[in-house]
Image (cartoon, rainbow, N blue to C red):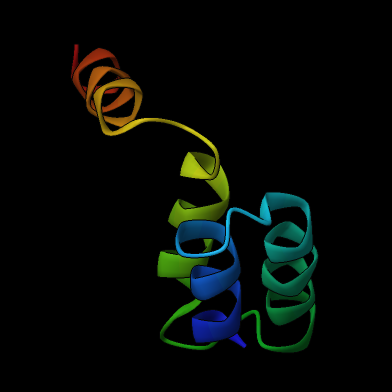
Amino acid sequence: MMMAGFILANELNKTEEAKVIYEEFLKKYPDNQLAGSVKLELESIGKSPEEILQKKIESKN
């Protein structure tokens, strides 16, 4: 499910479909070792690398 969401978001630009897949993953597998990565994907979906980096910098300050 995580890979399906990743492909939808990053290769096919189907961000809304990816969000649904990611959210379903988190509902079904909240304690999975990939849950943290899925949460990060959800936070960064639809954002440019620059926006993601800026958010990281701001959260550290």
